[in-house]
Image 1 (cartoon, helix red, strand yellow):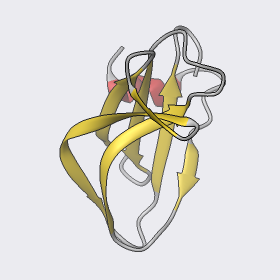
Image 2 (cartoon, one colour):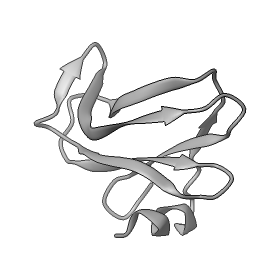
Image 3 (cartoon, one colour):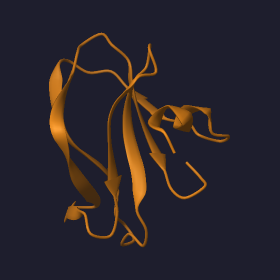
Image 4 (cartoon, one colour):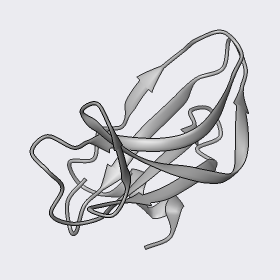
Length: 94
């Protein structure tokens, strides 16, 4: 499924956050209980709805604490004052 189509899925409610400038180098999701299948985790610009990065996080992903992580091919810089969103698509659900 294309990254942009995820925001239009029924029941999909991305998490929103707003911080000072920082660099995102990996995307992750909760790994408790242990992951049984992969999910597409995506980072969006809230204003333009542009997908800035996505990663498939699943059973083979690196686990640190209670989260599984996948590194991004290139870091993404998030800028203060902008709105960003995270979404997760697992099978046919968000």
